[in-house]
Image (cartoon, rainbow, N blue to C red):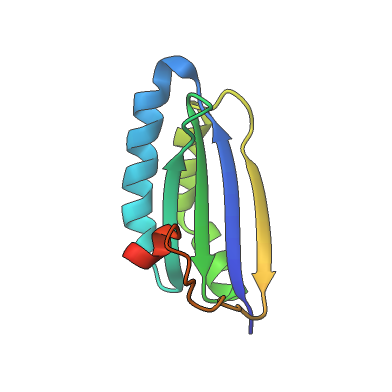
Length: 114
């Protein structure tokens, strides 16, 4: 069984970015509590106003399908559609395995400082 990683890019309406930011933050909290959700992160792009990236990690394709089938997801879709300048771009990756690099010995590696 492979995990699923969903990467979504959203371009919001400039005049409604605060509403979009709030909706995405609230949605992240709710989705993290769902069965099979291993992670749900939202980032606002610094160099592109009103643009966001969402990275979701699911334990299985079944868990992801169950998430998309919920009434809460349908309600979110309707709410977010009003706040977007363009349709969101979504890519789903199936991950069969993960390789972590060895610990860096570079003094400039920010990962060394926690």
